[in-house]
Length: 324
Image (cartoon, rainbow, N blue to C red; front, side, top):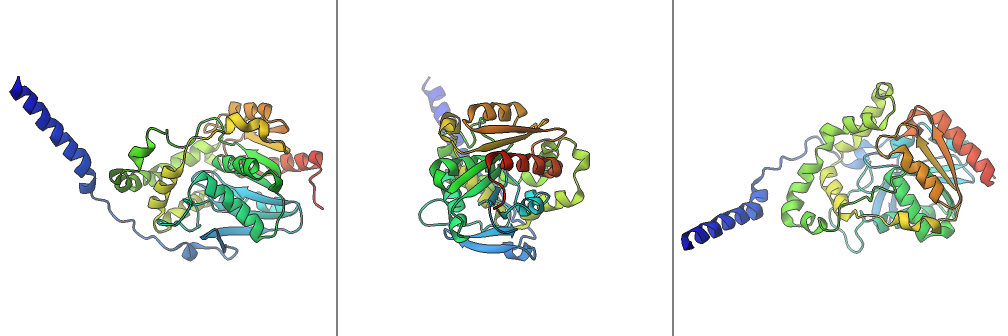
């Protein structure tokens, strides 16, 4: 019996050593061909210092209303390129890359608040408004960007004139479960995590195809623009930091607090955030209008930009938020 117990303890010790030491023995090949964000910028790119971050921003238009565009997971300012000119005919458009995406700076060390945290993302939106001297804006958020837009409206309702929520990710919980977060923060997972998120290099196109109602209509330019941020140095480590900072949202319990006018836009064939979730969101928000865009998936602003702009214009007219 003692021999069996001793053997079990030895086996347990070996397993613990493997779990503790093993991750540090896994080879992590360096990313190849990466560049600083500024090297990948476009002629109309701006890099603006907001809350100790160099934020990649593009602007169009002038006057009011002011639209601030918040892209979804894995996207960037390029997600809005089909609708920015149309919105710019109405007012001022400010599109930016959220931390962890696009060409915005990806810090791996910081002092104070984690720049990838939900709270820091809210304050980044407010920092952008302050930088451009905007008192109130219409926040337009797609998917996870819709979550940030709603959190901003809850934290700073006096700065938000209206919300346009495009296939917003509200009911899925978001972030890692609380019981997993301590595991993700271990030195072992901090080493392996960036390697895990590199799967987006091979699965990114699959996810993009899933986001469209008709993947055969995805332009080659769109594929290239979604892949472009994967050329930014340390993109994998920053994406893991975002994963660590993410947590489950309490938005479903707070929808009644969002009193400003809201437009909920969804594609009729969203396979990422189910269309039914957007229908539910429009019902549960106190002051919401619903627009369902036919033959569109998770990114109707890319797939059906004209229908998207028509829905926005109709909403603005009904809410009295047209150009001034």
